[in-house]
Length: 145
Image 1 (cartoon, rainbow, N blue to C red):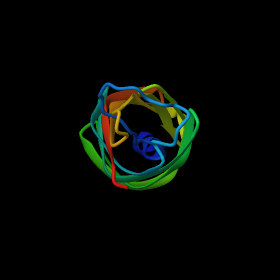
Image 2: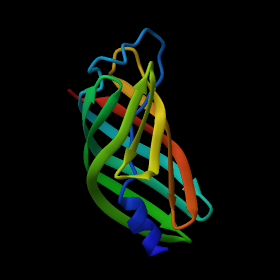
Image 3: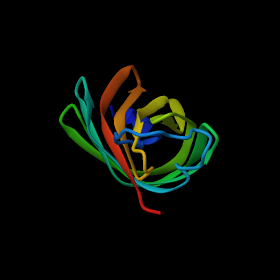
Image 4: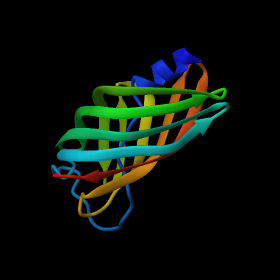
């Protein structure tokens, strides 16, 4: 299961929170730096959390990309603890109204959720599938600049 943690470390992280309001998906509201975390991301005999991740996002219209760094991934797999620090790319980012979706590094790690009307926080659910095991759990991100 060490391979699972290494594979998961290759891309677990994300953005989200909910609020109502009119959103302009052709804007640049997601552009900036975000602090990201995920907790209780679990499934089968795996439980993970992510802390300390910084997302640098650039929105163009209804899409966004960027990078993540400093993601401290902690996992328990079959009772054994593993910890990694990971950096990589935010890919396949889309925004439609308040709905956001993006991946970390690959399409096997997906973050879906909502952004508030002030573009200051986002949250949702992270889903990762690695080596035939799927884990899901909540994530959140707050804009830091």
